[in-house]
Structure formats: C-alpha cells, structure tokens
Length: 113
Image (cartoon, rainbow, N blue to C red; front, side, top):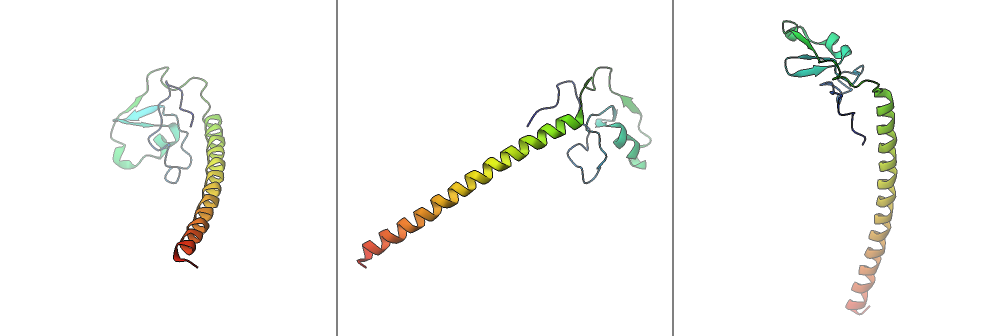
C-alpha cells in the first residue's frame, strides 16, 4: 500500500473508521502525545479537555496531500491484491484436487485393487 507522504502525521483514529467515521486521516494538532485531525479533535472526550492542544509545527501536515486520493489508491491496490489472492487460491484448490486424486489412485494400486 502507498505510504503517506513523509511530512504527514496520521491521526490517532485514522485506522479505526468504526470509532471515528469522519476522521480526516492527516493530523493537525496533538493532545499530549496523541495526534488528531480537526474532526477527531472536535469530537474528543471531556476527559482530555483539560490538556492543552498543541498545533503541529508549520509544514508538518503534508501540503497538497489529498487523503481521498490516498484512500482511493489504497483501495485500488487492495482490490488488485484481493484479485491476485483469489486467483492463487483457485489454482491451489485445483492442485489440491489433482493431488487427492493422485493419492487415491496410488493407494488403490498399492492395495492391488
């Protein structure tokens, strides 16, 4: 899968869309050690409200980084890999069936039937 641009810092919730479906992936601030995107920063719990928000230094968020394009490319790469794996799985299933038949014939011949 394509890596994020080196200057981009991922949001803490970028890999957990079930928990934060509106996460924008690229962090813009930190709460303690945790990088958050603007959407996740807004949705943070009251537990962390007392901690100061530290904006990431200028230049840290990738300039021109398009999260949607990155996700689209990652999705395309995932589908390509999935197609390749399905093809390999089908080939292995055919090989398995051939080997089963071969073993059955070999056993029959060995048993003298």
